[in-house]
Image (cartoon, rainbow, N blue to C red; front, side, top):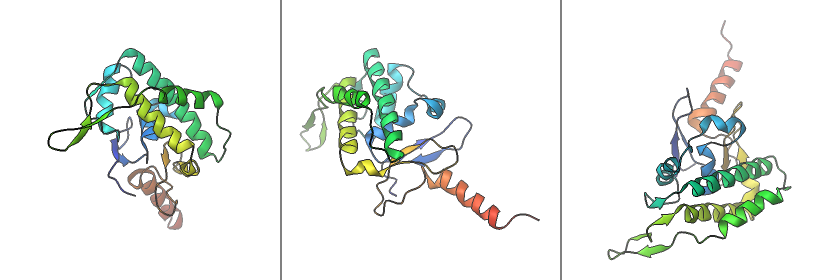
Length: 198
């Protein structure tokens, strides 16, 4: 697994680890959510979302201006994405029509506009709005959920780990959110089971 797009995460009371969600839309889930993901909640204010976006694979840097309405819309899309990804990871294609409609609504907004600078560098027309960022997330989700990648959405195989990711490995055999976290825990448990003390 390439770590080129990996984010460093630090759960409360846990060790830091590198995590690659495999795609922008699932990357948004590391900001929190419902159930087990609520302990990861990072988006309490528009400034929290503004600060998180440069760490995402969106590539927008610190150009995004987020309003309170943008944050509320992002939390709605994130909740829909979580439910859709959990359903897909379970092997079901019975995705919620309401959640798909939430994605479609967000995707209908114009996405960020690429521009080229005098040094031939690619950047974005500034400012980028929160709605434009969310449109990019929703459009990415439509590509994932509306194509063959749907069958590669996984839940980490670690005990009680809620992390969801797109398995981009060539053989489609990724099991863990991170080998540094759940993969190593599994290896240690397996080793202890094979060679009990005493």
